[in-house]
Length: 470
Image 1: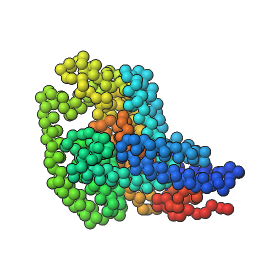
Image 2: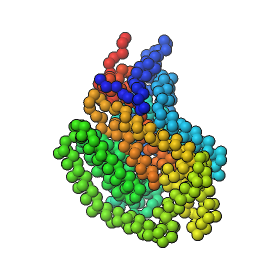
Image 3: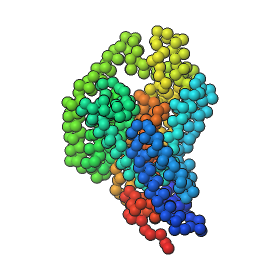
Image 4: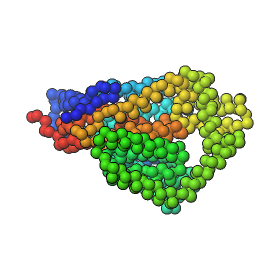
């Protein structure tokens, strides 16, 4: 029987904590209380599944579902509160807490405190995903399944969009975008960034255990990623495929059960999907490629009033901000007013309006607004999250769980796309960052029955619960 391993070599068994705290009911326990506990656990699990499903839907759906899941977790706090004490031993969670506190503190010296509070530090509220999902991590595979199912609904909207129903999608969800994008109800940039994370989950499962579902999910997500036309997400998707290939070769060398024949079939299916998608989507894809070429040529000639040119200007101003305030940064919310003033003073030929509210790159924006301290804290958060996802034993005996062990690659895909989009300043992307980070953490009990009757009958890879004594 294998046991879970915490990141940084800390051994923790969540189920043991449930046994210790959830079963330590007061002497005045009544049948009514037992009934409430059983249904509260089921309701909390349902709320977590809905929360993960709604993450890829419009921001209001994600906000409401997260609030409901957090409320259900709060109702159980008096019985499972001890479980949350184990969360304080997670290095990534501690880094996330420190990063959020530093972000709030930086508002004190920000040129725009309102923007710092609302658009940056306020998005830190998504750390509640840790609290809502942590007690549910014995059902990690089901949570990831719900998370990816939400993307399927988005792909249906993309198909309607591609078939000429863009006006219907825009009328229902109130979207406005260029004609060269097939984004469904996603915003093009936010949707492409999120799809890079979903692709990481599918590719991780495909490299781990193979199978028809991960292969189909990889193909569908790749087609959606190409169709949405976000060039930074294309780069992230290519990187995820490369990482997945390296992972598969390493696991094959270690005699993980993946055959050459199965790998060949998967490669052929992916190539066929790329060919079919390229033929069907080439006019729109070619438009984005030609547009990138024109913008690069224009930027080289000195005209920076384009999408790529504006990014180059914003990254340059972020570098100037870091040089000027290397330790503490400009303060949350201070990037746009400082960068526009600096650009007007030092390069008046460039219009200040090319500078947006954020620097269109997570590392450069954090460097500008939070300095070296913020970079170290954010880097510690993501590094420990990925390490936890890689090192935690998410297995039942010798059998891999596929999707349950792929959360780290989903987070990596999102972070690579975050080189071209600021992940923590908007709800549509921040929700994915925090949910994927939460799903990377905390080992689940392996090959152990769920003993608490408040849980549904089976968790991932586990047998039916044994009845409690008495």
